[in-house]
Image 1 (tube, rainbow, N blue to C red):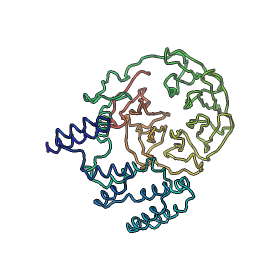
Image 2 (image 1 turned 45 degrees about the horizontal axis):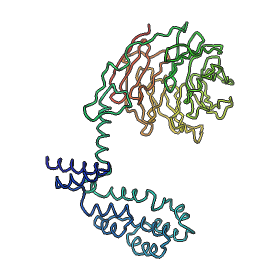
Image 3 (image 1 turned 135 degrees about the horizontal axis):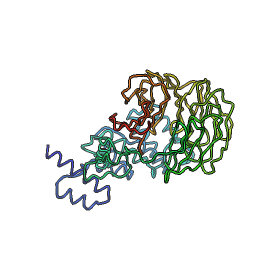
Image 4 (image 1 turned 30 degrees about the horizontal axis):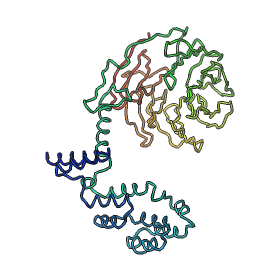
Length: 455
């Protein structure tokens, strides 16, 4: 066991030193240890593919029963060597029983008017492109890693180790480099658990708060019919926005942080300019109160929804661009702008924004009424239920991957929202009806904090 470990460590270090450009040190290590990175046959294969020396490649790959003849054929065509290319097709590719469709495609390339036309037809980037490296990667799949170590293997192992350390650290919330010199563990004392500031500008209940995407500002809205924008540097009000005839019930920032949208039971949505504090657009013609809106990543469009069976795609200029005859009491858009996720009652409906079909791509049924929905950058969907549970859904597998609970038995009576937290979305955060904020580690489902503060 020790001899095997020693050999693997030496070979990994030799590969790493070579990759870093320290070839002399790599050769010295091989000389002193008596352990080589790879056999001469593997070296011949690697060098042959990268240099395009197909004779050497043929000798190497014949030993393990794999072929690189397709690329040899294409490179001969690129160089205008039609007769040698035809010979490869007849004498080397055909006997390998390559599928008929592939042979027909390669044969048709002989009629290409020039090398550029041939590249377009074949989807190939040429001998100077990345095709040789791609071929080497394909060949490597058929070669045991003990013979041909995968590229940058030591760096890959160290990356896996640091990722494991991050997942193991339940309070981790940083994008900074994790040193390999010691085990990583974040101290709880650096986690935000204490009230830093109490904002008193509102004169009645506060119903919703939202930080800007860059974290420079905070928006709050509530029963006093005010939407206040706060500068987080000194927590002074930047703007106090008024204009709805009824209290604003929802607020959300555009992805570029230039605008916010507010909704109200007065059946309007208002678009506010963050720089000036002016209302730039009021969206009317709503059949009911809009309970939520979701921005498109382009910051030019958004979708509104409510209790009635109508979701509307708007342009910030004021025009309606599309309508779905379905309910969306809360909603979100994936960060690539391709999917709209809307919730109503106990259902999660997923729509394609590319096709704009009025029928959902698929529907997921929950066990209880849903009060809010959020989506992470890696397309995991978080829903908050009236049974005081939060479920994390994998859209690809359409299954619950994580569950979080506030440990309360009675059904919720109010709209309680949840979201992802932390610079890498490593936490799940939720309000509650008992005036507390709950925080869990997203990966481990461990309850980290239950924060008090409100009466």
